[in-house]
Image 1 (cartoon, rainbow, N blue to C red):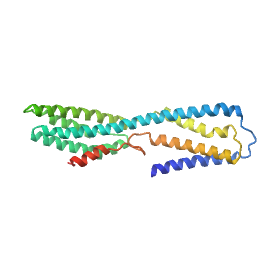
Image 2: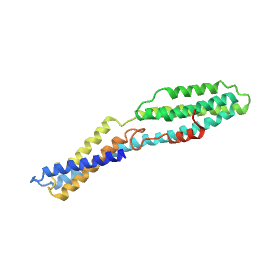
Image 3: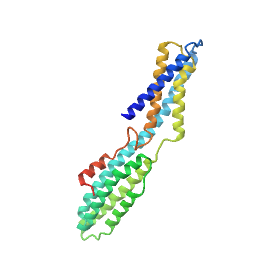
Image 4: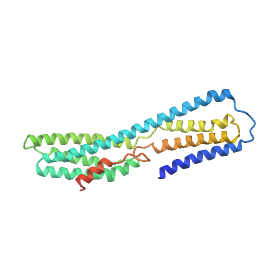
Length: 249
């Protein structure tokens, strides 16, 4: 609800600014130049859309990768939990307890931190402890040996996924691209007034709608500029579901 309200306020603010500018220019006597409008208008619009598309594509790629990482992490944790059944009883029980603790920490500790763009070493240390638990096992038979190998493989996957989460938590659009989005948005929003639109109601209304849409576009870009916060923030839903299945420590 808050994100929708922000977008609405941005659109209304852009439209209001355009209306005020149009009203201030109501006595302007110069007429728009057809040549200027015919060439610069489409060119600026194309540049604006290109910069906007680059920004959205970059942000969407990071968000998509983060979603996939969450699913992969939940799958690896699930497999690790059930692989523990093939280890000797004591080691298996210890590993399962550590998996429950790790999954809970990912949801309650890592995700809130990642929303702020940071991540401490606590869950990384927990992965190291689980690896030591598995390596201490002296497999009594082939089944236990296979379970140990599978557990180590899942821990390798978890380490890689966690490292990816840590990277994604700090990823934002380059400042140059953000500056480009802002600059082209301002130019496109002000272009109708700069070239001298006719100071009549239909022209001002259309220019106001364009300014509102441009303002909304800028706000959306900033809202999507982090994979773990904003309206499309990646949530630990797959891992939370696993915690509900296997229980908490």
